[in-house]
Structure formats: structure tokens, C-alpha cells
Length: 236
Image: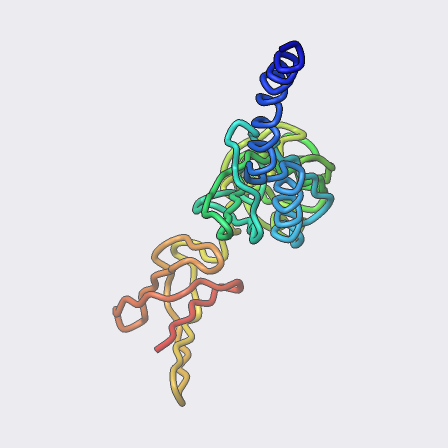
């Protein structure tokens, strides 16, 4: 009788552990968070490889509470509308053995030189190289339209006044006026196999590349593209 009780007690004690081990052995493998983060990181490195300067990428950890199945074919992607600089998201998609898709938060910083005003600049002022300085910083925190090279700003006109050290933006600058209203202009019209040159008078101010109107000597009004040197180009 004593032996029977000991055997029964042993079976009752071991049964839960055996059942637990069986469950553990048959439970499906879960996605490795470190591997998921690595795939996302390598993808973003490739996406940002053409950005100027030093790129730093931070990716949020995978939320293990999602309990995702281990993936044999894990691919990263950029969600529609996602940015490749600043605060953004990167997607991870699994197609085998189970389909699932998640998004991880990411921060992409880009450290490089950008243009700032060397001293206060006033509206209407033509920007020269002496008016420009370069500083190094994270351009991901700058407003859109930041400028990286002097050629983007030199020779253009300030559309607004800014303080020294303010980053220069494309929307603050205007192309220099190359045609003044009332000035004598040269109209150059051309097309397939012909070219005509005549004189006229400008009817509006225009920067290089903008539309300029002119009145010809015979009273006819024409429109074309303003160019430096008082030239209006008309293409047919």
C-alpha cells in the first residue's frame, strides 16, 4: 500500500511539468526582436546612402507583446508618405511561414554643412558670397527648403529680412531681376529651322526664367522667358 501511494504521488507531481514541457516543445518560434531591428536598420542605411554628410539612424525596439511568428522571409519597406529624414517609420513585412506586417518608429539624423546668414540681411538685398556662412548641424530639424551650397543663394534677392545665423531657405530668396518694366529689350524668337530677332519694350519686371511681356515696335505684344542682358526668348 505504501509503495502504491508513493507511485501515485510521483505521478501527480510530475504530470504538470511533463505537460508544460510538451507545450514548450510544440510552441511555434517567435520573431527575434534583434533580427527585426537589424533588417530595418540595414534597409534604412541603403535608403539614406545618397544623403549628404553623416547619417545617424535610431530605430525603436520591436514590441514583443505582439508575439509575432518567426519569419523566414522578412523584408523592410518605406510606408507611403514616409520621410527619409527626421522622424519617420519603417515597415517590416513577413510572407512566410505566416503573413504579418508591422511598423517601427525611426529617427534619421543627417549632420552636414548648411547655409546661414553671415549677418542681418534685408528684403530686396542681393545676396553675395560675403553674406553667406556655413555651419554644421542636423538638417533633419531644419525647415524644408534649407540650402547646402553657395551657388543656390549667391546672386539671388532676399524676399524677406532675416537675422544673422538664420538658415537660408529657398522660399526666402528670389531670382535676381534681369528685366525692368519699361526698359528696351531684345526679343529672340526661334523654332524649327528659323530664328528672328527684334526689339521691344518690357511691360513688366521679370527674374531670370520668369515670364516677361514686351511690346514690339509695331504695337504687337509678345510673351517669353526673361534672360540676363535684357533678352526675352520665345520658342515656337
